[in-house]
Length: 272
Image (cartoon, rainbow, N blue to C red; front, side, top):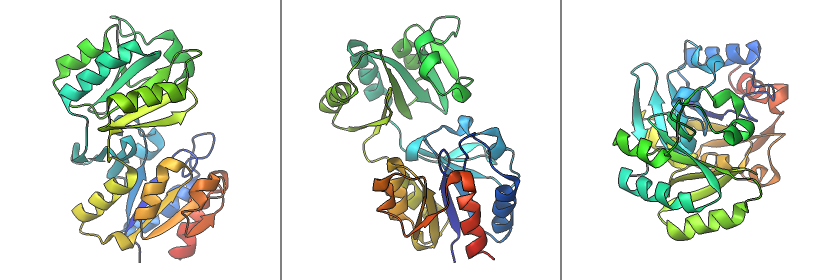
C-alpha cells in the first residue's frame, strides 16, 4: 500500500478557482489517519502554500520550489534543501541586469522583488504576477544589493520578461552563461532558475529516504511537465484528465480533472 501521497497543486489538487472541495479535504484526512503522509508538491515556497492547505490540521510537510526544498511546518524548519550558493546567486543577479527581465530572488521562502525602497513592487510585475503571491515579497530598487545583505543561499530565481522580450533567447543566454543552473519556463512571461539537478522527483526520493519509506510505496499526482520527474520517481503515477499530452505519457493511470475532484476519487478508490 502507498504511504506517501505527493500531489501537485495548481491544475491537480486545486480547482481552477484555487479551492479544494470539502469532500477532498475529508478524503485526505482519512488517509492521513491511516498513516499516509500527504505531501503537497509545488513551485511555490513554504510561505506561499495556500491557506486552505496550511490550515489542514494533518498537514506537516510540503515539497516546495519545484523540489528545491522540503519544509516541516510543525518543526518550522527545512528538512531538505538544494539551493543556489550565495556567491553564484550574486553572479546571476549581476548578469541579469543586462537582460530584458525584472528579477526576483527567493530566500528562505520569501521573495526579493524588483521595486523600490518603500517595498513597493514594480508595476509591471504587479500586472503579470500571480496576484495571490504578492503578499510574500520585499521590494528593492537593487535586488542584488538587497540579496547580498541576507548572506544566505538563493532557493530560486523567478524572472519576469519585459514587454517584447524573446523568452527563448533570454533562456539560451542564461543557460550558456551558467551551465550549472537549470533554466526553465513556467509561463509565457516567466523564467525560473534553479540549481541544476533540482526537480520534484529528486526531492520526493530524498523525502522518502528521510521518512524511511521505500519509493515504491509513494504515489504522485500531477498535470504538467514540471511534475514528470516526480511521476517517474513515484511507485504509481497519476495524471489528471486536464494534464498535458506529454505529461500523460508518464502516467500509470489517468484520473478525472482537477475540477472534478480527480485526486479525491482516486483516493477513495484505493483506500476504500
